[in-house]
Image (cartoon, rainbow, N blue to C red; front, side, top):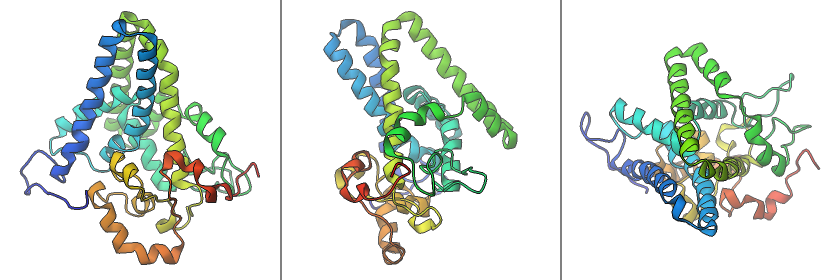
Length: 300
């Protein structure tokens, strides 16, 4: 995953590289497995149902921090139509309108998990410092468990988008209403499927907040090159499309996922000089990193 296979200018299916066939395929595999789970539901025992629901939660956290995340920065296809269809697929499988996710995520990059200003506000709506104190991050547990409930409602997000980009705001609302209609139909057809998956949906969103926490705990939001925490654990990076290169990603957000190692090699000396934090643990397991235990948080 370190070299790009670029399509010739003006030709080919993929906008940046043929390697994007991998995340593009994963989008539709995820959606297909979710549909298969729904169809198989009446024939499954409760052990299989709960096991599938747990996988559903893991898939949301994985998708939002790998496939959907990369799609934000580098849409896969040359075709606007294919990209729009993919946005709807991501919306349905993650339960979050992709255009709204993009808006919130780009605000995250604008602030780089910044500390509150004199008025107690952060540019980044999901900054780990937003609900902290004395310049210290919020403790992990409340950040992870409360993050979902602190998100703005979809209508507020759509209005914020539309204030500067009316067409994009309208697209965000369309994604929301399509998602709401699909899940309303599922609720009518198989209410127990939707109700059982609802708490696991919350767990999936919480997993994404857990990843976000350890992507930034101990980073320096005021210094662009050090505004993320990286992990080079190979299995995690293989499964999450190089999401572990997070300091590199925040330093150069448009860098393609296949080129993250090359970027690291290019800027490694500067990273060392700036004290970029590196953890040996994958971000979802960041709580196992003993050096993270010594980083003071607002709870002391």
